[in-house]
Image (tube, rainbow, N blue to C red):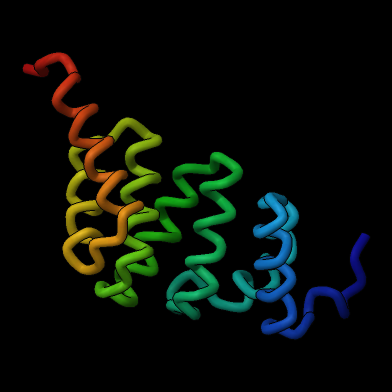
Length: 136
């Protein structure tokens, strides 16, 4: 059982701890570390885009795709020019099989910043779309 003091942890320290845990491929522990920071903002408060981006990455790495999508959408709403959030949203949508939506986000990310990983992800989605059976 955690002490009440643990819930009032310094948000910067919690963010850094969560980032370290995620870099060690421990997304569930990262989410636990980040929870007090996420909970500090009500559902109607935007919070900090970097917090939602980190949460989205942790959700994606732990295959919580709907939560990852919600986090990345929130970041894009706060900062439509965040190319990484659009890339991550595209990858999340791709993993859900929502290829058309994924292609849109990956196209935008690639147009904003033509990084090789963005271009590769876009090519992969386009190839999957081309190979998909025709839908009515």
